[in-house]
Image 1 (tube, rainbow, N blue to C red):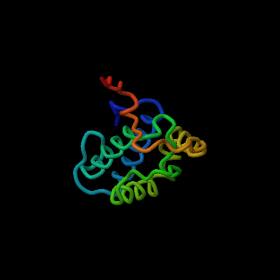
Image 2 (cartoon, helix red, strand yellow; image 1 turned 90 degrees about the vertical axis):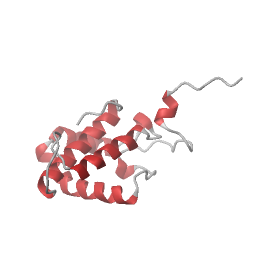
Image 3 (cartoon, rainbow, N blue to C red; image 1 turned 120 degrees about the vertical axis):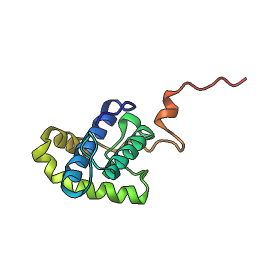
Image 4 (tube, rainbow, N blue to C red; image 1 turned 180 degrees about the vertical axis):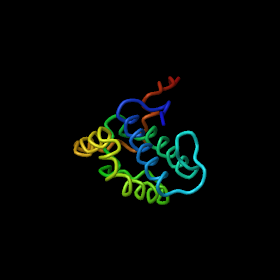
Length: 132
């Protein structure tokens, strides 16, 4: 699953989440799947994850979610994502070894200084309107 809004490390993190979700969904979810190979509930979580990655105040310096001091997911989505990662994490080493190693390396990066309140990757990339 490719994201149109994300680039660099954020896009790679989204691709890793999509691979983990696909592994989980094919083994655990019942029902029909879309072209990406996930059920509607898992597809909804992937869209939510993309939105949160796009709005991350850390931007390209974002730590992995497990190391991040800012918890941006709602409790229900956090629990669903945690279940997916708990199931798919060990299986990623066999199915997607490169993505697993990159994720492990990213998790060892130091956490950058906390961004200021109301910081948002989208707001930082847009030019500010001139004040008269």
